Length: 527
Ligand code: G4P
Image (cartoon, rainbow, N blue to C red):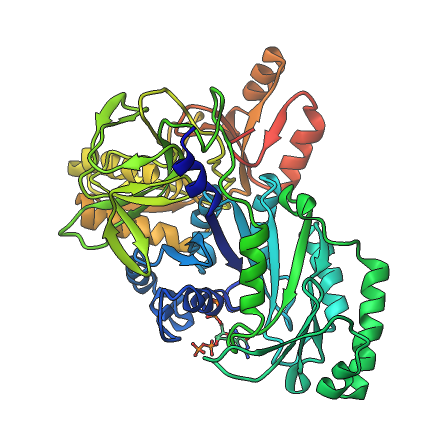
C-alpha cells in the first residue's frame, strides 16, 4: 500500500447534490465552487441548468446537457481536500441518469426548499440513497424567504425521507425577519446580511445564554432561540458521525444559497465528516481503494449531440489504485487491453487532459462506442462491479421499424443507445416485439431523433398500456416455470436475457404477488 495513494484517497470527497428542480441545487453548487476558488463570479454555473421555459423542447434540453458535459463533474481543492461534485440532471425525465450517478458518489447533499419541503423527486432519489446506505447531509434552503416552521420541516424530512435527522444549525426567524443561524455544531452565531457575493459574519459564543446573543438578535428572537435549542436538546439525539457514515442519520443545515449564507458552514462540516472513497463490492470480491492495482467502472456515457462527431465521453469512476494516461488497461467485458491517450478530468470547470487520477476521481474517456454502462476497467484482473442497477421503467412503447431498408442500422442504433443507458429494452416472450421502457416521455423523442440523425434509421412508436416491468426470480424452479407459463402473455426478457414480468396495472401486479408467493418481484435489476 503506497503512502501517496492512501494520502490521495483520504483527501477525496466525491459527492452529488440532489434536489427537486428549483430548490437551489445549481445555486448551491455555484457557491461551493466559489469557496473552492474554482470560479470567481456568481452566475458561472447557469449554463449547466436546464431552463424551465424549455421543458417541452427536448432538443434544447439535450443541447444544454451537451454544454453540461464540462460541468458534469466539478473538481476543486478546498482546505487540503480534493472535492469532486457530480452533477445530476435537474429534469425528472432524466432521473435514470441521476440514479446511476448516485452509484459513483460516496455521499450526497440534499437541498430542500424551506417553503416547499420534501418534493417528489427528492423522495425518489432518497430511496436510491437508502438502498445504498449513502451518507446524506440536508441543506434547507431559502431561509430569506417566508417558509415553514423549522420543526415542521425536520418532522417532514424524517417522515418523508425515512431517515433520522439531527439539526446542526438553527435559524433565527425566517423570511424578511431572518437574522441568521446558530451553529449547534460549533457554537457560533452566523449573522445574516443579504448578499450574493460576500460571506456572512461569524460571532463565536460559548453559550447561547450569553447576553451578546440578546444584543445581536434582539430580546424576542434570542428568547425564542433558547427555547428552540432546549427543545432540540430534548428531542434530537447528539450528532454521531458514525451513524451518519452508516446512512442512519442525516445532519441538517439551514441557510440561503443565493445569499451565500450557511454555505461555508455546510462545506466545512462536509469535508470533515463526509467519507472518502470506500471499498466497493464486486461480484468476485470487495475491492479496496488502497489496492495498488487500478480498477474503475463506467457509470455514465455522454453522447455528443453533434451528428458530425459521433463520439461519446465515458465517465469512469476510479475505484482502486492509480489511473495513468497511456497505460494499457483491461476492458473486462471485451477482454481487450485499451490505452487512453486523452483522458480528461474536470478541474475548476475546465476539461483538461490528465496524467493520473486516484480513487474517488472521475475520468472522462473519449469513446466511439466501445463502452457500456457498468463496464469495468482494470490492471488485468477480471472484476465486475455491482451496484449499477437498472430501475423499473414507468413508460412503455413498442418500437417498430419505419424503414425496412434500414433494419440493420435500427438494430445497431437501438443497441448502442441502450448501452449508453438512454432507456431499457425488453423483448416480449409472447410475440417477440421489442419494447422500450423509460422514466419519461422525453426519452422516446430523444431515441427517435438520435436513431435518425446518428444511425440513419427510422422508428415508429406504438402505444402499449403497461404499469410496471419487474424482474422476477424464484428458488423454486418449478414455481418459476409455472408462473411463466400462466403469465405467458405478460412475460419478456431484458437485454441480458433475464425474466421480466410486465404488469399492466397495479392490481394485476398485486394479484400476482399474492397468488404466487414463491416468486420474488424486484423493482431494480440488482437483487
Ligand atoms: P435548481 O438547480 O435546484 O433547479 O435551482 P436553482 O439553483 O436554479 O434555484 C432556483 C431558483 O431559486 C432560482 O431563481 C434561484 O435564484 C433561487 N434561489 C436559490 N437559492 C435561493 C435562496 O437562498 N433564496 C432565494 N430567495 N432564492 C433562491 P430563479 O428566479 O428561478 O432563477 P434566476 O433567474 O435567479 O437564475
